[in-house]
Amino acid sequence: MIDAERHALIRGRIIKMLAKEYPNGMDLALLRRCLANINIPLSSKDLYAYVTYLKEVGYLGIEVKKWGDESLEYAKATTRGLNFIDDRLTEPDPGVMRDE
Image (tube, rainbow, N blue to C red; front, top):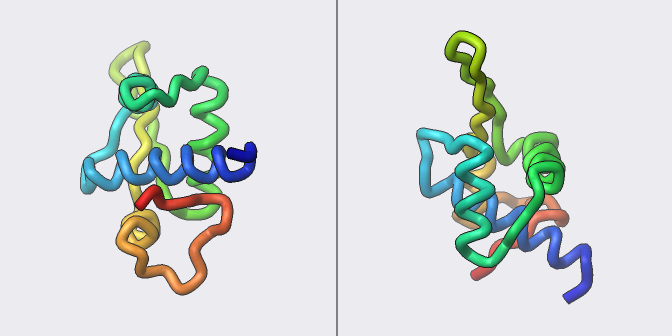
């Protein structure tokens, strides 16, 4: 599998995981562990790059939740992300692939 296809597939799996949690999100540490459980081990840096891409194309949002000095970043699928998963977009982003 070429790198571009692999990256697109990983992005698709990320949005698929988050779509299953909708309307809730998932903190990035848990998302990283869930991906590792399906044989997609990523560094925090790589996960953040994928999540940033998905945010920029409108498939997910990122929210920071704080409790005193602690904070967690949550990723949450948007309605556009859900429509991508449901194959309802007329022009889906070419950098994200569904794994049918």
